[in-house]
Image 1: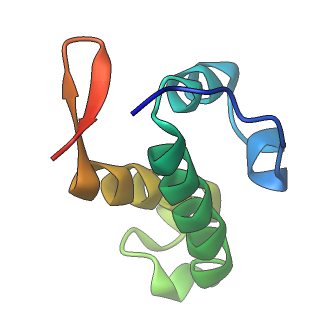
Image 2: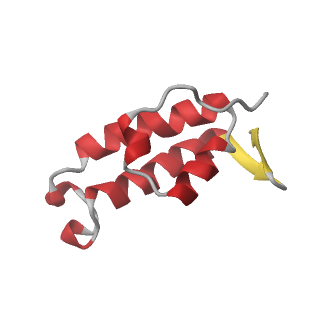
Length: 86
């Protein structure tokens, strides 16, 4: 799958670090879509600390980040420097 930089920036992008943005940009387009959708849904779902495993020890943003990467890793794996579909 060809890698293309995302031409649209969502509000998910504004909340991420430069390192994370760079990692997401290295993903195939479909995996980028998975990450952004999962991240946005997790931010909404985990606003309430009682819904988070760690409670208040982790922010909704931290939980959303972990959830989004887990969603990507269900469909893709890293081979060398590239992400490939499982």
